Image 1 (tube, rainbow, N blue to C red):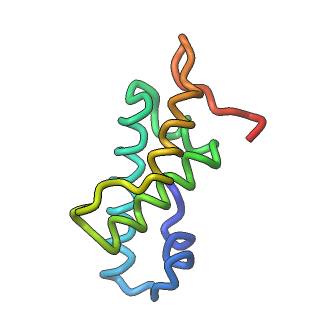
Image 2 (cartoon, rainbow, N blue to C red; image 1 turned 45 degrees about the vertical axis):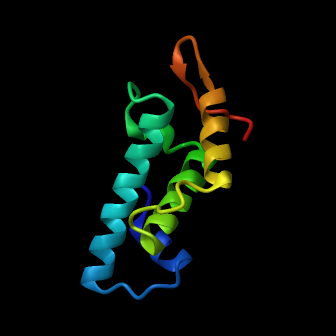
Length: 100
């Protein structure tokens, strides 16, 4: 899982118990949503080596933090990152792009 503290730092949030738990939960949900959108047969650990996956999960976490219901849906940038990750799925499933 992506480090909660790095997400708190990125959002410039204080690490209170409530905020830390909320960001931990949102990160976990974000990682699951991204993974399930790309190739849910692969364990989350296989994605966490890909910088695009990390950025996508952090982007979704940020969007969920400010708008829990995603009233406007996923941003175009996030959709682009998911499409990029889908492009890395071959016949054998997801393989992180080592050149990224």
